[in-house]
Figure (spheres, one colour):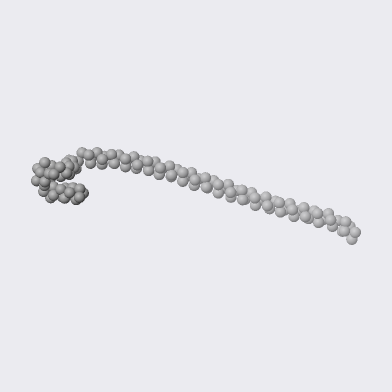
Length: 129
């Protein structure tokens, strides 16, 4: 029995060290698995971020193209408004009403129909009042 009593601290120390080694090995293995999962997740997120960035760039190019087309269309519309012969006639008719022209004068001078001349005259007089 004396041998056992003298060996007991050594046996418990060796057992504790063995358990500690097993625990360290298990923890290290878990840590390696977690690192691998983290690496995979980072790579997945990197690919998703790249795809999102590429998509955003594509959308940005499309928005710029749409803005360019909108600007061109606005310019064309302004040009069409300025060159519209009917608009010039109505502007002229409105100016003539201010100067005191009647419906017949508007029809003869501007080349617009009687209802149009009456409408321009009524609108101009209403806005003046």
